[in-house]
Length: 122
Image (cartoon, rainbow, N blue to C red; front, side, top):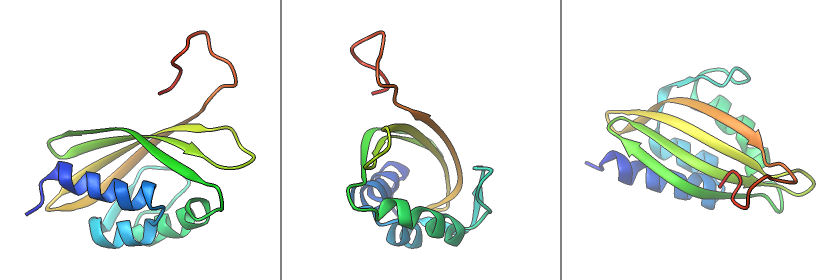
């Protein structure tokens, strides 16, 4: 049985680095996936359908900055970049049960053009 850190690390590799939501969700997300993003219904297929166009866009990049796992909860901190738009800082929160991702929350914040310090967002 894969531990939760290994599960989330492999999910993040496929999902963010390889930009392949369909494979990541098929491999690691439960069919009863609960979605807390108010713009999406529950279930993995709704998330995949919403995310595939963004993730497969030419020039899109999703760089994992941090991966935190504590028991059944995980956070993936991501720098999302796409042509023609400011970068976005993303924190995806996941809950894991019985070897599958069963729940998701997210927080997104545009990266500002200027910062009062030399280390904003990441």
